[in-house]
Length: 175
Image: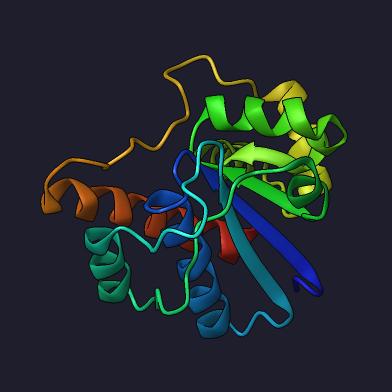
């Protein structure tokens, strides 16, 4: 069971992907009975104080999440260092996190990478995921979730569905 765990989600603008993941993780944790999970998000190029993008907020609501009170913030070394687990939307975001908080390497993964490692290695904890990196390297496509910004509602829904599926898998396996 995850206890006193703070998960940070990171994307570019912190108005679409990472806030969807942040708020969905809370909704799923409640549904799964995971206590003491806190989440936040940040962007590598955030417009500080911006609301969640309206289509992203609509998609989030459709998955049971709530965008109320969301405010975008910029990724800083302090924000990254305060997280127990950092899940990014792309490999580029992961590299940015590690450039500002290199000590977070063993706790920082793309969301897709974390799910792949959990599934391929059977890892059920963050340290086990970090250890699995050595033996289960990605040899395929980048483990990125595409940015829906500026695209149609169908694209936002596809991205939201992907995030929801990945989070559901991850929260059920890594405790």
